[in-house]
Image (cartoon, one colour):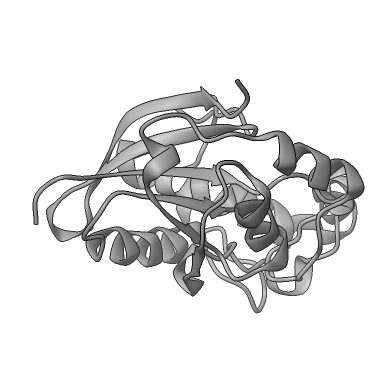
Amino acid sequence: MRAMPFAILRHAPTVWNGEGRLQGLTDTCLSPEGEAAARAWRLPPPADRWKRMSSPLQRARRTAELMQPSAAVVLDSRLREMSFGLWEGFTVKELRATGGEQFAAAEAAGLDFHPPGGESPRMTMVRLSRWSATLTEPVVAVSHKAAIRALLALATGWNMLGRPPHKLDWTSAHFFVAHEEGRVSIERLNVPLTP
């Protein structure tokens, strides 16, 4: 496989985003503000001509449908959010207050942070690596915050402890390159979605 470029971005805001709640696989919809934001987003060149893909979760799918220029959307479950299992619907503040040593240990595990009944960043990273290895043409994908952080870890070797090596703007597109055997590298980050 030759190096294949792709762009990825987070869905527009939901009510739970505004409240700081872990959404994971909970299928929340865009807030009215999120719908307006997605309608205003315009993909930058050359991604404006690329095949469009999305997580099947409605907040990502709707974002992919609304942003400009309009295009058909192909759903791929490998682009879904990391599952937060039993912790979905809670804020990190609430989990820190009630989870005690169990939650503290989970947070200290970095790539192996594993919510009860959920998925770890390392598992998400493997899933996205497999997705990127199948790309046969440039694509722009709409996904989720924890999934994109896992992709950043895949590209940089970040162990998800401490600050990330790059600060990501969640209202921008991030360009990567897919290489042999599921490896990815950064092309450019934080490319604005508005003219």
